[in-house]
Image (tube, rainbow, N blue to C red; front, side, top):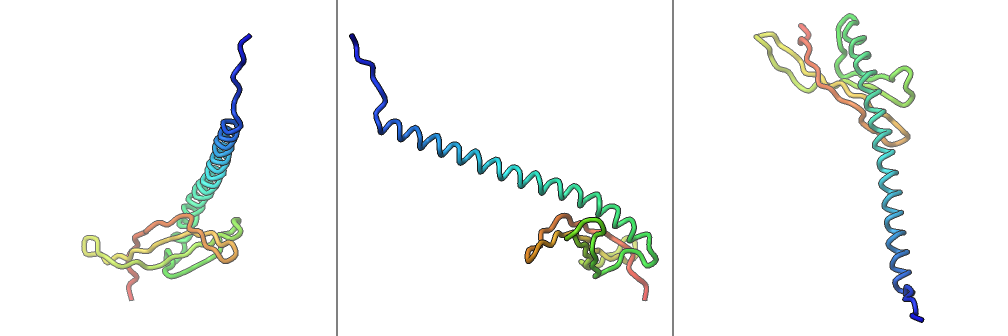
Length: 125
């Protein structure tokens, strides 16, 4: 009768360590995937809201406000902000470049969701 060869204790420990490492790596990768998916969903929603909000703000008298900030209605913790970036001219018409941003404020941290640079006619003094 031939004796069957079994795994040594060292081989079993090595196999368990390898399986544990793979399991931890898989869990970390899944967690990172969920965070990225959540952020992508927020950014898509922010793009929809920003499009609607820019349309509403530009339809008001005076157009898009410069150096303004406000809360986003319907999205708790979200704020929008406009800031001037500079000026240029287009076919001798003076224009202003304005950055429109949406951010999520959660406690002490601010997470940028979306930013778009817009061009509007410079206000005449």
